[in-house]
Length: 410
Image (cartoon, rainbow, N blue to C red):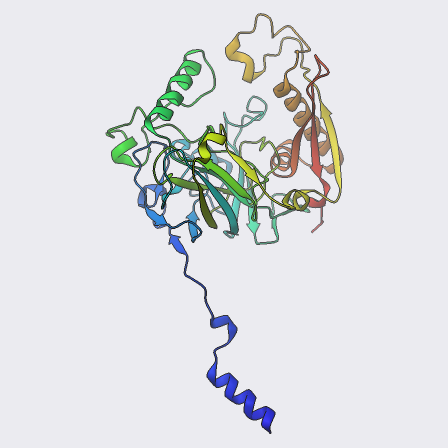
């Protein structure tokens, strides 16, 4: 009776532990159907983009993000819908976030606390984009059902891709000097015929700054290439528990993130991973003067690389080989008089990676019964391109490593 009396008293005096809450995080919510409808969203990089939230060092904050294409794609979408996607909308980014106490010349340590996926994701082949854009010229889409364990798709029966979510795009805003440096070098590359997206005001946000009538429309750089500030890094290793080190070019740093991937193969060869929206929980810490150590973004972690490692794998190798007369798309701007006739290029890692990718696609088609489009998608989400060696000239080597754990049956 005494025990029952005590139990009754304790239960009436104290709430269930589920009702005990810690400090509330700052939530940067998304609203509206697209980035243009959302005051917390932008898709071009410029130092004058205004912060949408302020957080203290060590404070937990949540960024609600959109899929990297800012698309209307859904479970009923077709290849024709992919072809209609407006790439001027990518990437929709949540932020910028002002980190209190962060000054120009500092750096911030951004720890990924958690990533919660949406229920739906896609992998698409967009014409004119992707590593093998000359080989895969038609639009294609895989629709994924997502949960916190795995991704499955009726378009890829018998395949389950484990969740290893990360921010495809994360970075900080530049100052004017840094931005001017990017603009100068990227315009020089464009003038030489290189593959680079120069400022484009159509669908650019914030519209008053970067849009068609924006005050800085010729200075707002695209989000596709990563730069010294971070951006579209697509570093699949930066899953929950890892910490990124990002430089601060301006006071408050101007942290942003988006383009979250449910999972990705190292290389993202089709141009997309398993793309999704999600809720990203982060914490930031300021390192005074830390930018002097960072010529590019750094990151660190504990056993996350072990978590990413497959329990079973199959690998193919690649060498810098091609057919005589073939002009690799990534070398075309350099001219083809010397390159095109050759079957072997010297110390060309990109060509070796292409060879490895094509070899893996051929393997998947011949041994797994996949179409070439399915094999391309699977290689983009579950195959890692690794450098095997860079010294055995002319034939440097790349391996494509398939995670065989994804083959699980229906």
